[in-house]
Length: 110
Image (cartoon, rainbow, N blue to C red; front, side):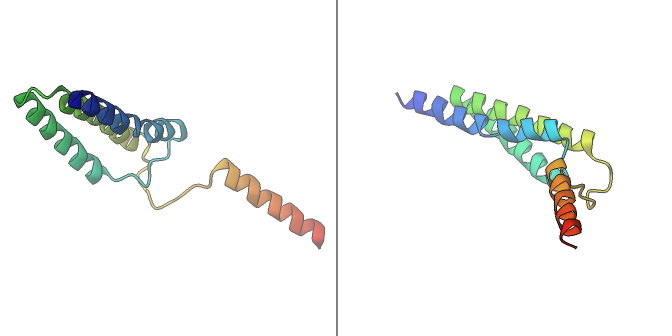
């Protein structure tokens, strides 16, 4: 029974990263993501996988294997979509439309 709790908790942990991975690949916006965080998380999860393998603890192995894969996917997105100058933030389409709408309203009020 305890092992099933491990599988359930591990599944929730891994699935919690899916929205961020999906969003990063869809929007191609990764400027606020930290490469040092990915390096630490991938290293820590790899060590947990070794620990799990030595103890034959499949929930630990599978959870951290999933985390390594998802963090690697985010790190690849960060490198692939980085334009070299992370300080410049481009407004989203929604933000641009809101700004244009405000400008139109101000122009009508004048």
